[in-house]
Length: 140
Image 1 (tube, one colour):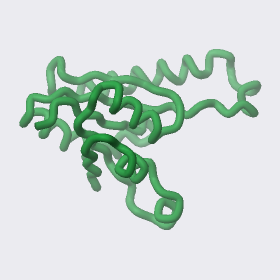
Image 2 (cartoon, helix red, strand yellow):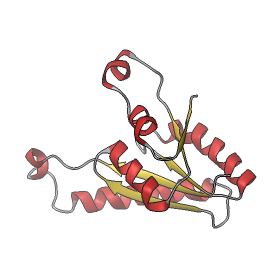
Image 3 (cartoon, one colour):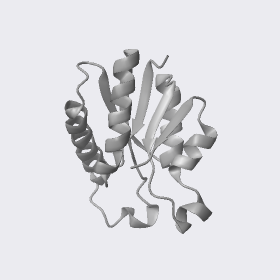
Image 4 (cartoon, rainbow, N blue to C red):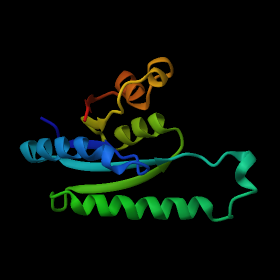
């Protein structure tokens, strides 16, 4: 049923992705699917650019790629897990990556609902609303 599963990972809180990872691995095993981990780095605001080292974005990307590689190794799916780091708006880049890999399922963890996310909307909410594929939001 599902062949390409996308899992957004917030490296600021990688444990938050654990329920989504566990669920996606179970589904990938059931359907012989591939898993793609994606992390989205925010753009460095122009007003801060002069205060950070010139290679700040490169360092951030390298650090994120290394962290995703560690998570990918922990996933017990030989040769069926890949990872990518994108830069930009979080939900926009998740949706773009889903489109790029022709994902038929996005599995993501959700933060606990609170007043802040109720009024402003969350990244998970945006992905659910605008994704062209199925989205499974896993709560802790």
